[in-house]
Length: 116
Image (cartoon, rainbow, N blue to C red; front, top):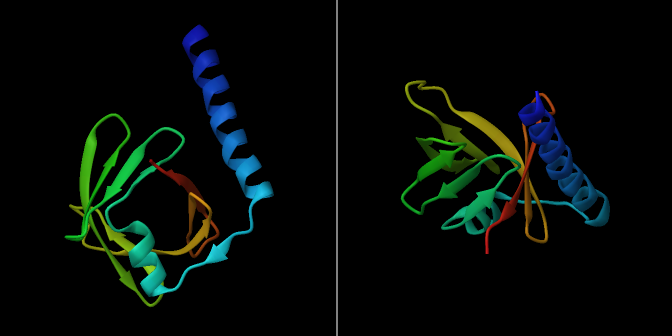
């Protein structure tokens, strides 16, 4: 129970950090060329995971264990595919300073911060 309490507190602080960033910054939607430039060769840190975007089109997502997928830019959106699925999921991308936001077609939002 105590571990869950610490985990919950850490989660709250991480989410509060991204929320305050949202309130302080003006989000700018990126076009296809800007998405490719913003993501290629970087690592994004999320609340409890990180993701690396390689120029080759490979991407590594890690939330305790690594999971390889592929990514591309299509119709001004970031798209990714995670085997064994063969479907592509696409997201609009916004940027505010060193924060990147992915917004899905159903309004789901994932925020990350570019690792320095």
